[in-house]
Image 1 (tube, rainbow, N blue to C red):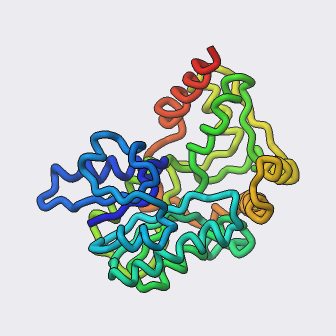
Image 2 (tube, rainbow, N blue to C red):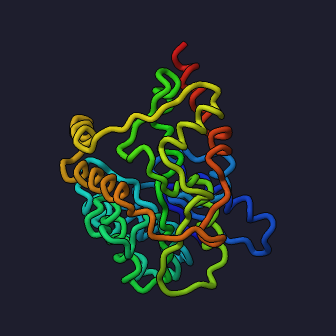
Length: 305
């Protein structure tokens, strides 16, 4: 039995699809159980093939029910900007850590961040909180793999409207800073492989770096080519970002943690792992633009009419 948290999110939905696609080809295919706040958001085909536990996976009663009889868990904490980083990552995970021990769950695959062992990782805001969450899970004694991810291509979807309307996207990174970036589908594929073949033990990180390092200026150049319209990058200062986050209503400590994470990434936090055939992943930014960004930009345009 594999339990999936956040199965309707970007990563979880890809993972759920991969696990269900694998089932017909595997003798004695494993059962899948999901924890979801709103079962109506599950695809119809998936809803008929999984066991559904309704609720939040930060709730002790919910994870106690969900982890009973489970062999493996996919763990993803959706960041909650209304809380402090400790509450959003560690306090949210504590009930699950207890339930892992209670029910003798053997393996956990979690979504985390690059940075472990890199200078500045202890001052990297949300990344620091994410790495502490990994330790909390691994300290239960389960076999644990943290998917160490850089920034996602999908972060650009937040700018789909402005890319269409003004040809601009923003971030706080240096325009020429090359860094790894990854498609969430690639992260889900690595998670699926680990969950289906649980011959691994102990604790460790599994970097998923995408196929190449790209700067914001590189992203603008590729988007211009793939979207057929000029796109440019506008860098936002960390102070401007902090002010925007506070105006959006984020908890003050969470907002500061976002800024600290951005600062650490700009100082090379994501550069501590070499790309190899084992740490790279296949989806290029060109491919992602064609498959995901272009439809999103076009959809943004159709909503305006």
